[in-house]
Image 1 (cartoon, one colour):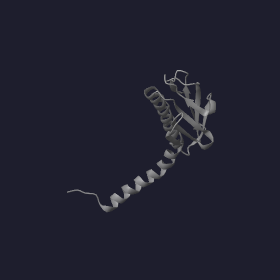
Image 2 (cartoon, rainbow, N blue to C red):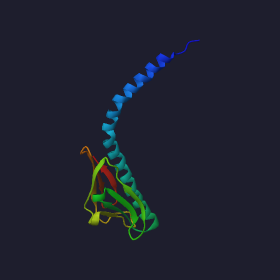
Image 3 (tube, one colour):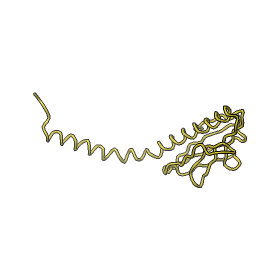
Image 4 (cartoon, helix red, strand yellow):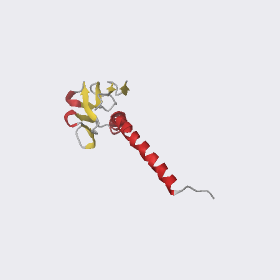
Length: 142
């Protein structure tokens, strides 16, 4: 019966540890880009959810942006906050343009009161732009 000796196992564990030591900084370098993609997809999902709620409930729903606080809220326009998202530290800024009062407001037909864009920027100065058309169509512009 063949098996590994203790020194062989310790050598393998040491090699794995050394490889992990070199891999960790490389993985941290990708963190801002991963966070940017993740937050962008979540924001797109929240915009579409606000549109869906507006159409199904026939009540206006809004996404309200707070650029200085790096957060946004999904809420009934005249009511309660349904969700608040505080952006992670890897996201440097969120910049909505084209909306009055930094607010995307959906009407009962699923359209927005004003079209515009939301630009997210990470700590590496990479950006993602989300476009919201007058019809309510939401897309990530590359």
